[in-house]
Image (tube, rainbow, N blue to C red; front, side):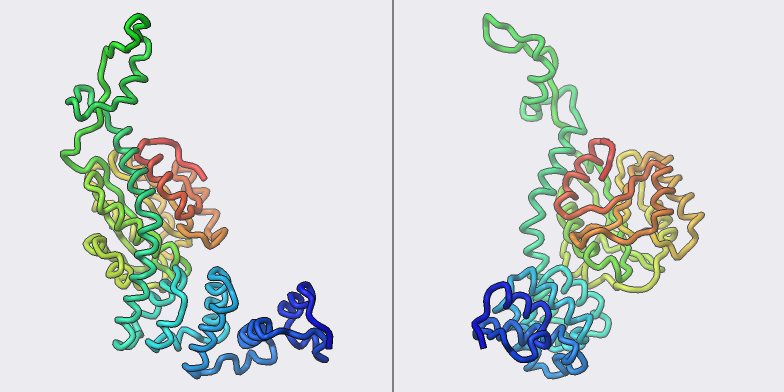
Length: 370
């Protein structure tokens, strides 16, 4: 038996121990541990038994993968275990749930299981979801809040500002032609001020498809919706839909409650959802409707397009996000996306990092694009 080289070891890990039936490549203890956890999940010979239904064995396996692999790989392996080994059922056990590495995909899984989840697990599940939501808010809230507040300040100008309302940068730019070289100063002919904040300056409607394929997008939309709801200059609505429509706007103060109010799965009726959103809109020209959906319409497509056209004709800024996630290129109905484009409704996927810039551009009336 010869010592394992790095390349030989990696190939054996990739191909599985069966590729080295005579064990010519020796593993040290760490590599042996890595091979064992990979075999439990991916090896063809073990796949029938897998991790079995043993909670202690699953707990050990979940601990082992965190020992041997970085967090990004752990998340992928957990998702594969759910697909290959039915790990969803074992997530019904609190002791298992506490050992799983929490991420957006796990939150989506817990949301899909919420209707069948035993009461003893729900408290632990809320803790897990709360942890992920808190981490996302810490990462995403400041960029979104700064982008939206800055866009509102630039989009709404006050021609007769009080001193504390003067936008000095904009005032200087507007009066550069009045620069006095002798005094080395600018004589401002007009002042540019920020808009007053007496009422919500914009209304934002997040209309979110809660079909199973949109799980990650629903999680991010819930977090972003909670951040937008905390901005006084914006009035935010959160509407989720499948073949029915639910208004979750009152739950935006607690995104964990909001996410547990989502029922992932079922069909898709965008026409019904747009009809509901039409009833919420009172100031069309000051409203941004963000439809988050893969556009696979299961309802009345012709009526859906009529409603979308009516919203645009009324002055509503409408954008269709095919995904709001980091999951890669989404699957979507290209034909409907093209019909939306003909109505001046851009349709594209958006990562969480791009969302603040998108909202800022929409508030300022800029052309939206990928």
